[in-house]
Length: 191
Image (cartoon, rainbow, N blue to C red; front, side, top):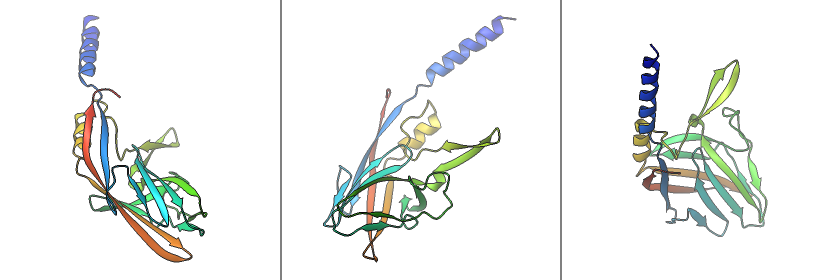
């Protein structure tokens, strides 16, 4: 009788050891408005740099002007392969994804570091009467040994993400569109 649980335990150990977690790095390039492998854009008004994190896109905006730049977060959006996605930014937070997001003004000669998360990637589960955030990854860096996750990650090669960035200067509407391409997804065994 005791041999069955030991055999089952050995089988589980063998199965678990076969499913090795693999880690991934994305080669992401800015294609528009100007090609850049540094994910950086600059003009007379501002400079923007981008970082693609597992759950969100982080960006730093520097206002070069003597006037403020106002960002209306509810107008900012992204699209992935042509599918538009509503976003929420850091300051609004993941608990307020259905609320109106107040605008932010970047003062003259100042920078703003923020990030955007597609609202569809913010899910909650109820556990013991509490609402718990269940993070979904936009750009996962590991597959946890799952063949399904590995396939999803590797098929991201060629994905286009468009970051639509509207802003206001002296009450006048302006916008910039940034198009990114995942040129490659590189798999490695260790983190």
